[in-house]
Length: 174
Ligand code: ADP
Image 1 (cartoon, protein in one colour):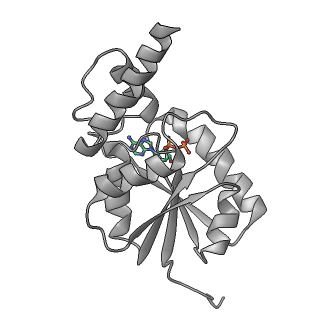
Image 2 (cartoon, protein in one colour):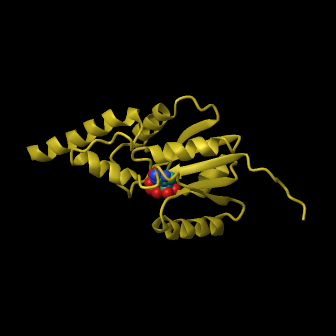
């Protein structure tokens, strides 16, 4: 069989990134070494309540990554496969932490395959030092006065505390 396009060049890494964690940064760095270009897709969803707006999330990702010349960050509302097609990408990358991620990722990968069989989903294992980190857990830590150092990039700590403290004080004033 003749392979039409044997090399995957552009990978899309979609997620909420609310906010970006050291686990996300690790995945982005690792896949940026594998593909010509990586597009980090910040999902904008009207259904999902996020702590940071999509623009804020993009800004935090940008600050956290520093200089990675082949990484771009975009915001998109809609189906990931539509974004991948628009970007002429070939691969959706997802990170895999525990077994609990697996079931969700398999079903998501199969739905995307059904929607567009030309797009492959590639799962990348979380590094052992980061596999326990999730954006949700980080928010819980900060909300309860814990230190998020070692969980999120240094650039995220300030904005995270400001946001959650603001929310707490707003709640108290009610
Ligand atoms: P989503 O809401 O789409 O799951 P997330 O921002 O939570 O978005 O995660 C984006 C992707 O990064 C997912 O594939 C998720 O499994 C992966 N991921 C999240 N945290 C980590 C981590 N600590 N290490 C590796 N991958 C991770």
